Image 1 (tube, rainbow, N blue to C red):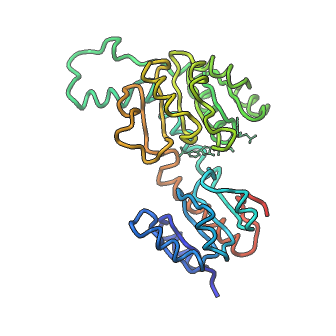
Image 2: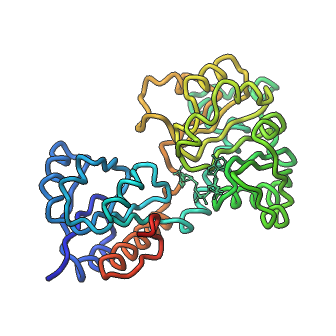
Image 3: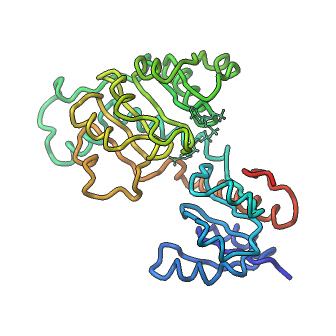
Length: 321
Ligand code: NAP
């Protein structure tokens, strides 16, 4: 008999067909009004779950005594209590690597947009305000040749370092849980303390996972160490930054600006003070959101799930059990 899975992320027809060849699929639209109720109904029979952007707490997991694997369509696993899953003997898998380059592209899109005021000035043109040639009031700041500070030198951090060093002739500083000599050799990057990075970088880019050690990593003190002309880019998770402190620093122009793809509360409320600020570029968590990358992530998640349910060790197992 086929094992049963609950799918809560839409898949392409080809991937859905591949799944359905091997498992019985129950689709649940967690965004629908009755989504949570339907999920609760489906959990008791589920051997696997495949989806993303859903916090699966113990109250939901208790409903799924047969659960063998959760295949998350994401690299970040901050939505899960990994230790609890391990205790329950539930495998957790993620989708690293396939989204690295796209997410680094997003990081650079935010660096460039914030530095060159792309969104603000494009809106200005659209509003019919471009009536004469520009003066210094509308100038931005350079990216090439500046100092890029990367906080979290992992996969995405290194992809940013490569773009910065090779593409934009930037000096690359990084802070991470450990020094990465091979990355230093490849991109002439220099390891330093977080405080030193904040004090020297023109662009501070966050690429750490959200964890107990990174929650609130960038608060008022850290923002105070940044140069007034520096720009903060967050493509990690919203809670890595103390958002209230960031809003204050931006309002007071303690730093030049911010490019933000992630927020404490997502979707970001339309009345967020961040959206009142010209020096903020806010995107709706688009880090990996391209057709190609989302399909590659979904394919990876399907492979992880099917391999786990076949009794094999899945390729991207987060919690070896
Ligand atoms: P990764 O390869 O694991 O890189 C994370 C790096 O951060 C690692 O080098 C890690 O060091 C380091 N680190 C962990 N805790 C730290 C701390 N307290 N202080 C300093 N460094 C620390 O992960 P990745 O694939 O690059 O992804 C990073 C994160 O980006 C994900 O977890 C996810 O939250 C976020 N992300 C966001 C989007 C988006 O849509 N905006 C898309 C993809 C990913 P060790 O390896 O030594 O622990």
